[in-house]
Image (cartoon, rainbow, N blue to C red; front, side, top):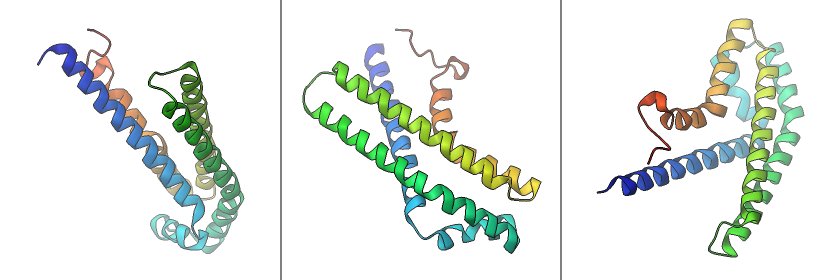
Length: 164
């Protein structure tokens, strides 16, 4: 195989992985927003050994954040639908498609920022060591996949992306 074909196939594979990761993250966030808070948060009390009082504060934060999360999930879904329509209307990447991609990326970034702030708030309701551990895990879930893709495409790992 020639080098251009290898680069093209590698780029397509990385693009597919990035799309799959973004899709998985947004679906997981939407599922987290849509289920019963009592069932959904029980694991926190067990995993982080929270008292009933700490758990009550965490539940209160979660209930306050849930409507924001649901609204954001709706906005992301609507923008994804707009993008699908724009992509289905032609065979080229138009300026409209590019604009919708940017808007979708901005919405996802806004969603991630809101989730991270929520996780920081929740971590502050926990004992300090448990809060640090919780926040580290939530950061991994929220940002980890994208960081892995970015690292895989950087020169640091011997990949010479951009040199043809």
